[in-house]
Every structure is written in structure tokens, then in C-alpha cells.
Image 1 (cartoon, rainbow, N blue to C red):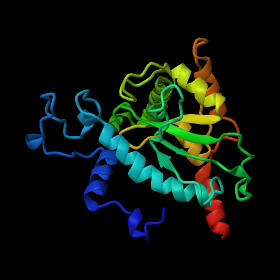
Image 2: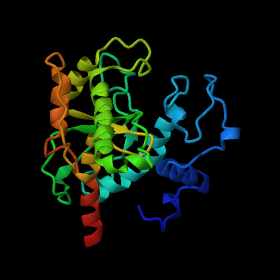
Image 3: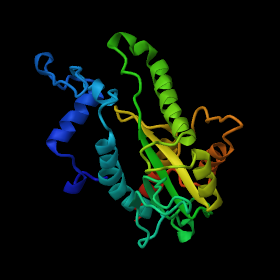
Length: 262
């Protein structure tokens, strides 16, 4: 997104925090680090924020969903020719599951229309595409003495993000809906039957993205595709459907090509 548009810029406070996190610079002075709800003094780099089980990640999750992804995808998907102007990108929409109408399997969703003529993707048979977003803790950045093994750290980080993807595909969060009686397999089977594609977008505290999100944005295929046990057939089917050529992927190169030619 162009920084010439002031709406695309971060405020100074958020930018400073994100830059320090990315460069692994101290957020606090050791003598003035705050104390967490759990009674632990925060480390100076802010790692504890994403590890503590007492701290809810809901605010961060919702901010990424509604303030970061939704407005950006609204514009990018249209520019890439995947949605039309009348198709909004929506968040937390209920009534996807008839048995449990309050269940909201998608954090963010849209209706693809590859028949617009502006996209190089084949026609999509999916009525709805969307994602369940998860924030996962990944390994700490390597020390300067470990830079020679940076490839090993990168591979380990990707495995952690893929583990988060698989966990979301196979388990149902308790906070998704009150009185939930459906298994994850039940939900995935219902969505698949109704031609609705659910992807898992894993994000780590350092800005790293899981393979499914990277494929959606950049078109990168996973180095090692996920595998599922035989008792998770609908998770396996949904995952394989997300790797089809008709599943939206590489939206940023598509949008850039469209923008450059206009």
C-alpha cells in the first residue's frame, strides 16, 4: 500500500514498537519493566506478552482482522480481479452453520469472482473464501552468534507456524461460541459441502507468516505440505482444496500487475 496515502501509515508509537520488535531491540529499561497480570516481570524485549496464558490476544487478533487485513484486502482483491465492487470483505459473519447459527468459522471472508476477466486465476467454484487467523508464539530470534545457522532457525519458525495451522484445522476453540457442540471435523465438512473454503492464516509476534498466508498473498507453495491422520478426513480435504489453482493465491503479484498496467 502506498505510503503517500496517510491512511496507510502507522502512527509513531505503533511504528516504533513494531520496529523494535522486528529488530529485537529493548522495549523497556530493565529497571522499569512492567509486571504482568500473572505476577511475572516482563522481559525487556516483550516476549512475555505473547507467552503468558493470562493475557488475552483478542485485542491484537481483532486489530489485525478489522484494522489491518479487512481494509487492505478490500482494495487488493478488487485490484487483483478476484472480487467486484459490490462484494465486501467481511469479518466475523455468523449463520454459516445451520446447526449452530452463531458459530463464526471465518475471521475474515469474501466472495470470489474469478470470472471478471481481470484475474489470471481459473474460475472458482467456491461460494465463500476466508480465513481463521491465529497468532502463535514462534522461537525467539537467533543471537548474533547463531547467524551462521539462520537457515535452521527459519525452517524451525516455519514448522512452528505450520503446527499452528494444523492445530487450528483439527481443534475447536472453546471461545468460538457459547455451548459449542460441534467438532472441527463437523464444521469443515459442512463448509466444504456448501463450497466454502476455510484457510488458516498463522502469524507470529515477529511478523512472520505461515505458508497458507504466504501462498494467499505471494503465491508461494509450502516447502512441506501438511499431512493429517486418517481420522481427520475433512481437515485434509479442506487443506488440499486450499492448494488448488482455483483457490485465491498470489493476490499481491496479481494486484501489482493490474495496477502497473492501468
